[in-house]
Length: 89
Image (cartoon, rainbow, N blue to C red; front, side, top):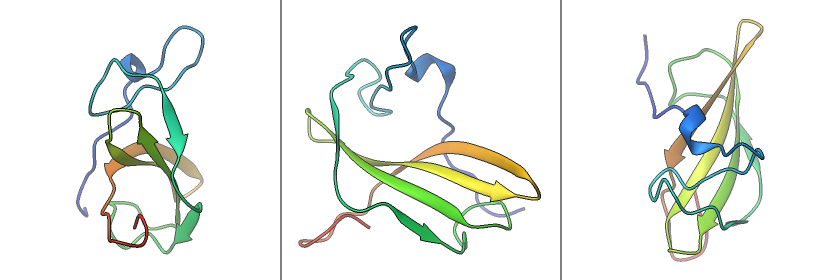
């Protein structure tokens, strides 16, 4: 099994389906922070590709909402974004 990442827990989604920042855990103002990417999934425990949607909360946290594909299942988790001067990675 490869590395695991923080899962997006039900507590991070409000009753009206609003997504909360996984760092603040109570701050729901998140904005898209760059292009959506897909890669071969080399840094998660599954064998398939990962779609990563970058967000930035209004408190400054940058994070990725990830959907990983593994043998017909989809796994949703959050990762801290690696930030360079030019873009979120």
